[in-house]
Figure 1: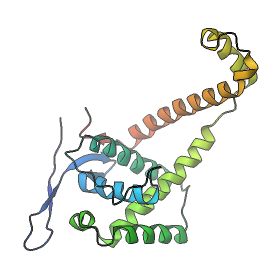
Figure 2 (figure 1 turned 180 degrees about the horizontal axis):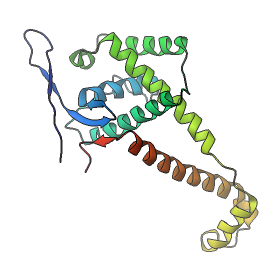
Figure 3 (figure 1 turned 45 degrees about the vertical axis):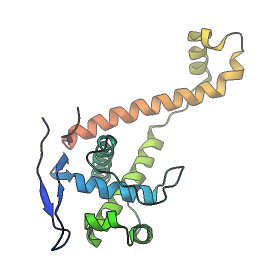
Figure 4 (figure 1 turned 45 degrees about the horizontal axis):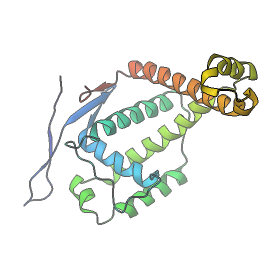
Length: 208
């Protein structure tokens, strides 16, 4: 059942309030739709897509893609908590300051950002969390990566001969190794996510 906990944030004395709702929870931290909106703006400023946006990444709870955004923020929050718990993936003050400066410059004068009424403390908090999560994610991915042997690649080739036809194994060996390594990494990452989601009692209130 969808759990809603509205909060009202006054835009100004003459404007209607912005309503935000609880969309998830990580341990004792309650994640709101407003937080998701803020985090996604910061995400697309610091880690822009291949095709850069002309403005801010504006996303609202009524949009279909908001569901994926909630999942992304919940995972980011739990990964950052795990990093802090193990005291790894610390970010430098200089890196944090540079990231905050980049965000503040990009959002300056933007109506969407103004409507969210984001404080300086929130910018610092969410930016630090994002950088910490990204750093720890990279650390964990590297630690979970494995080297595929020629024997493993050969076994996959033999098992899937129909796909490769008459082309010899050597022609596909490197591609098979890359594919199997990525497949193993994804499986390990998914298993790790499930463990830390249970550990920190992650709840997504808008999931199907």
